[in-house]
Image 1 (cartoon, one colour):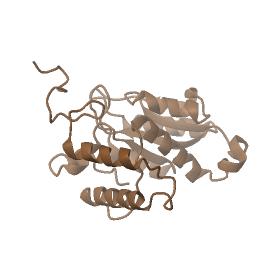
Image 2: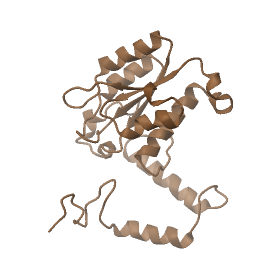
Image 3: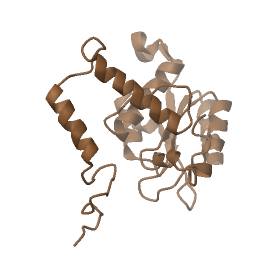
Image 4: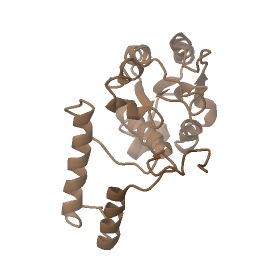
Length: 220
C-alpha cells in the first residue's frame, strides 16, 4: 500500500522527501569517497568546475544566458541570501558601519501567504519582525499588487526605507503564484529589490506549457 504522500513510489521526487535516483546515488558515492570541501578552487578545482558547468547548464535550460548562480541548502537559507544581497546592494557600507550607516528604518514586504522563513529574515537580519510588512492576498492567495504599493507609499511617507519585496511563486498552503510583472513594476518605481521565493513553483521554469504566465516577470 502506497503512502499518502507518494513517497512509496520509486519515482516520487519532492523537495523534502523522495525516492531513490540511481545517478544521484552514484554522485553521493563519489563525493563521499573524495570527501573534499569546496572552499577554494585550489582545494577542489575539478568539483568547482563541475559546479560551474552544472549551474550554467541549468540557467541555459530556462533560457537565461547571463547571470550567476549559487547552490543553497534549502529555501529558508535562500530567502536569507536574497535579503542580505538586497541590503548590501542598496547600502554597501552596511558591512563595515552597520545600522548607523542607514538613513532610517528599513522595511521589507511580503505576502501574508508567504513562507514563515521570510519573516525570520527580518529577525535574523536585525530589522525586527514588526518591520516585515504582510501584504494582503486575494481569494486565490495571490499578493494584491495595489495593496503592496499602498503600504510602500505609507511607510515611505512616514520616513521608513522600503528596500525589499518578497514575491512567492507557489505558496506553501494554496500553491498560489504572486503577480510578478505588477510587483516588478512597483519595485522598479520605488527602487526596491524584488526576490521571488520559488522553492515550490520554480520547477515550472522548465515547462514550456506552464511557465507562462505563472512565472512571467521572474527574470526582472
